[in-house]
Image 1 (cartoon, rainbow, N blue to C red):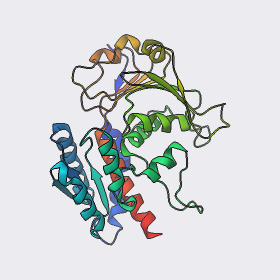
Image 2 (cartoon, rainbow, N blue to C red):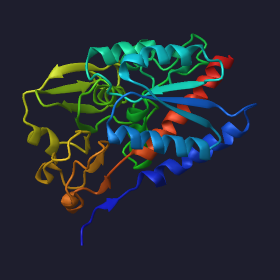
Image 3 (cartoon, rainbow, N blue to C red):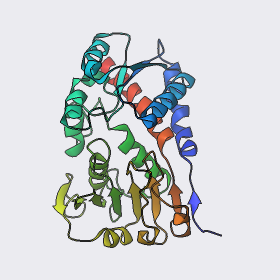
Length: 305
């Protein structure tokens, strides 16, 4: 009998979806979210369908618009100008290169539920949590990295006895993904909360950390000369996001008692990971959608101030 326990995203998401539904019900009209789909990836289409079902069930209007990628920019601007639209999300990757980063900046900052606008990204990397000096408008965080943070809080990895912003102090985490959408911002968020983070991609490993103890509030990035095995075996948490059906993180690299989380559309861990890991979260999609809608409500609150 394996000692590890599987934790489902639906269980973690429940607290957030209840709060979201209650807040949405207090608004004068149902908030409207538009999803723009311009790639043929079945996983993106499935995510769009889940988003639509969850949105409608919680009191939101959701519209999925499928367009050719050449027309995507024009469609973004149409949604920017549509006063009935409260939030916009684009199912990336579209081009899979710098063009995607350009398209992220086309979404109006007031409607960017994914937190990918440069203003939000800059705030995140500099650990600035508000948009204004009065600290009334909270900055928007990218929804998938934010979902991972909320899952780690739920699992007790964050230490609530420490001050807010320091609650991962002393933790070591390996993140196997360094995409600009998820992996890199996730590493920054975890480092800003005090963790030492090994950020892994196919070419290299980097170290993200906040500096000297609890004093510095902005993360730094260092080159790492350790192997993946060395990094992983010293980690309290292993987080994977490799978009490949064939990729499996080696179970022998998981430290006994560690937490294992997968945010890829394919399972990056073998089933025997529960023989070693204490807690295993095989997917996070439902928490990600909850964070998306939570961000949408935050945008509405910010725009009303």
